[in-house]
Image 1 (cartoon, helix red, strand yellow):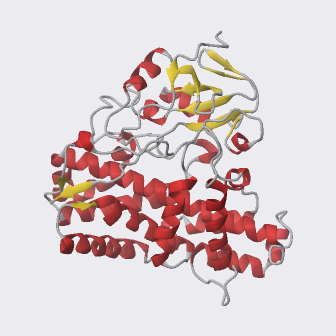
Image 2: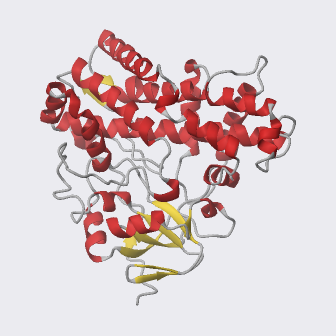
Image 3: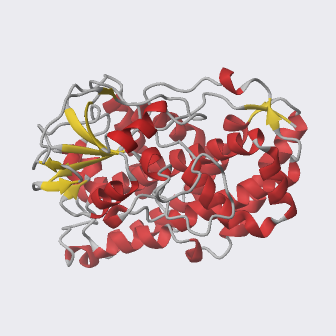
Length: 410
C-alpha cells in the first residue's frame, strides 16, 4: 500500500487547449494517483484514470465546499471570498435550491430554444456584415453565452460585457491573493444586490424567483434561513448565488464553444457531417465535450476521511485533484480517445463532473451548444482559422484554457 510519493510532476499542466498535455497519458498509465505540488506550494494527489476519477467524484467523503476552509491545502489561492464556495457547494434551502434548478432547466422556458437560435443568427449576421477575419470569442462565443445567462438571471442583456469583465479577474489562478480580487467580487455583488432590490422588483429569471422568495420569507425560514426579506446577510446570499451562477455558467459555456469550434475548423469533415446530418448534433456535442480541454485545472476535493484510491491511501485533510482530460482520454473507456467520433456507442464522459456535484446545467449546456454549433456550420460553411493554430495565444493562470482571441475566416 502506497501512502506517500515524491512530487515528480509540475502542476498545472500545459495551458494550450488544442493539444492534449503530454503528461496526461503518462500520469494515467503509470501514476494514476500521483503526488503533485500546486501553485500555492501545497501537496495534492492528482487522479487521472477514469475509474479512479469517477470514484473520487462520486464519494461523498471527498468534499468540494471544504476546499475553501481556512488552513487546508489549496490548488491555488482563493480569489473570491470563501463563502462563495460554501454557498454554491451547500445550498441547503429547498426553496432556494428549487429556484436554481428550475432556472437551469431548459424545459422551464418554452421559448428558450427559439430565443437562442435567434440570438446565434443575430450574432452571425453581425459577423457577416463586418466581414472576415473576425474574432469569434468577442463576436460570438462570449456574447452568446453571456446573453443566455443574463436571460436566466433576468437581467438586461446589454450588461453582459461588464459582468464578463469581472470573470477575467474572479477566475484567475494565482499562488497568492492579489489586491484586485476582493473589490472585483464586491463590485459585481453590488450589481446583483441592486437588481434584486430594485423597485419594481424583478419578475423574470432567477432574480424574479428570488424576489418572490424575499416576499415570502416563511418559505426559507422553514429551511433554516432567517429573515430573508429584511436581513442583509440573506440578500447577500441570494445575490452571491446569482453572481456565481452567471460566472461559472457563462465562462464554462463560452470556453466549451471555443474549443468545439477549434476542433471543427481543424477537421472540416466533421462540420460537413453536421451540415449533412443535423440529427447527429446531440452525439456530436457529447463527443466534443469529452474531447475538449477547456477545464484548465483539475477538479478539487478535500478528503473528509482516510480513503483508499487505487494503490494510495488518501489521508483525511489531504487535497485530491481530478484530472478530467486524463479520465476523458482513458482508452479503457473510450477506444481511440484521440479521435473525435460522433458515433461512439457509449460516452460516459466526465465533462460535467459526477456524483453530488454533477453539473445541474448539463441539459442547458447541451442545448446552448447544439444550437450555436448548428447555426455556425450552416451559416459559415467555409469557417477556418485565420492563422496557424500554433499562433493562438492561450491565457495563462486562468481556471479555463482560453485563447485570448479566435480569429477566423469564412
